[in-house]
Every structure is written in C-alpha cells, then in structure tokens.
Length: 346
Image 1 (tube, rainbow, N blue to C red):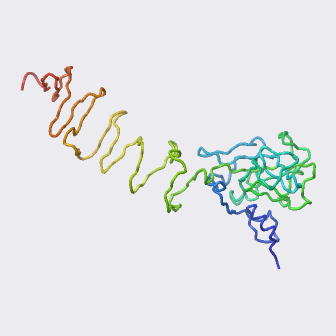
Image 2: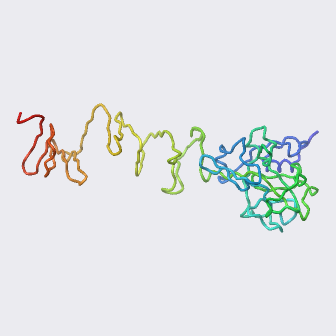
Image 3: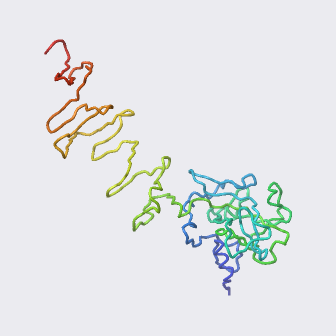
C-alpha cells in the first residue's frame, strides 16, 4: 500500500509540479500552476510566451530578451553562476549580479534575487522534457556544478560530466531557488553551481493586462478607476481598440478624430486636407437665441456674414471682387453689387 510523503508533496507543489505517486521521482511529475496571490506575481502577458520554436539555446544569446508585439516577454540566462546559502551547500539562489562565494542568508529575500522563471508547462507536450540548451529547446532548466569553470570565463566549456541530474535537485521556477534533495548530491565545498533558464519579464497584474479575446471574459461589478489622474492610456497609435460602446455620457477633454464619424445619419468628414464635409439628406439649424443665430468669420476674424432673427447681414468688402454670376457683396459705403451672366442690365 502506498503512502503520501508530505515533504515530497510540498516541495513538488512549490516547484510547480503535481504530486500523484510517491513511487514517481520529481522529474516524472507534470508541471502545473501554483496559487499566486500578489498582483506582482500574476503574469498578464503569458499568452505571448511561445509554446514552441523557442528563440534561444546557446552561449551567444546570454542575457538576450525575447520581444513580441513591442513588449519584452522573456529573458534567456545561459549558465548563470548561482549564489550558495551561507548555511550549507544544499540551497543555491539565482541572484543577479551573482552574490559572494561565501553565500547569503535565506531568511530574508535578497534584493538581487531573480524570480518568475518559465517552466515546461508553457510549452507543447513534445517539449516537456526538453531543456533550455537542447538543439530544439524547451523550458526545462539545466544545472551544472564545477570547480574549474568560472562566471568570468563564459567562453569556457562545461563538460557533460558537470551536468547535474534532474533527479538530484528541485528548482523552484517561481522563486529562483535551487535545492539539492540529499547531502549525497550536494556540491563539494570548492564547487559552484550554474543554471540555464528562461525568465518571464513581461507585465504582471499590477502593471497592466493583455487581452486576447473579448473583455466579457472579465466580469466587472464596480467602477474601473486608475490609481492616478491623467496618467494612463487606453491603446496607442499603433495598438488601437476597434469599437467602443458606451450607453451613457462620454466626458472627454479633447477629442481628436482622424476618420469620418456619423451622428444620427449625418456624416462628418474632411474634403481634402482642410475642408469639412457634411453629408446628409437635409439640414436644419436652430438657435436658442433670437439674435446672432449664425456668424461666419474670415481668417482675419472679420465678419463675412451673419444671421440675426430673420435678417442677413453681409460683411463689408472694401475691395471689389471679381464679378461672378449670382455674386453679391456690400461695399461698406451704402452700395450693393450683384453679379450676373451676360452683357448689360437684364
């Protein structure tokens, strides 16, 4: 009859693995989700993490960041030197920059601690056992221990004999802590540990949300209010929202339109670069004041014409314009001129 090893179960869950059978080794268990509580720990751009065709796998790509659709998503760490615990050689921490060879304490989180590494649960099933250094790479980490290879000698070569079996340690993808399972597997006092891994560097919930479908997937039961005034945008000039539906009043300080818009059957557009075009079947203009119903000005702020109640007033033109049929202007000296097509008076 089997039994549950509580120590193994808890360590596997913390390392983002399931616990199903005590007879399975840690390396045989599937990767799974863990409960993330703080907003800074919840990945909102996990959909941008590639599930196959991973971009990096070798030494020439150390420290390179993978970007897509204008955002950084993940970073590649190649054989990065880990920092030991100052208690023993059983626990190692992923710090950047690497800490002292004498080790650090485990009771407080070091400010250089790197977290949020990407586990094989983000890849397709065929890459579940592939590592970040394979010719067809996956998200499994690769660990080494050596007494001759140093962090300042990245061009050096770690041999296959330096690679640590995945059955000998647990790497916590969430916290970046590597723990050896027994003293028999611990590095010697003159050995250091190196790790190759992918790290998630995309946005978290406290920084923003990336949607891949309708926002109805999110249930909103209260107002959505930013934590600062006049500080955040909805979309950009290159990443625009498609349609906006508002049943209420849109309060906007400044409205800038680059396309036509339609209001109750009337379309407002531009004709050429500077002319306004209105398209509709008929137009009615109504003022709430009986005087100064409508006034047009030229570029010098001079009145061209204006309507008061049932009275049209033309602005004075001191320069006689070119005659045209139907043209009418007022000289400003009690003289009116009407243009017509033909010779002489009608």
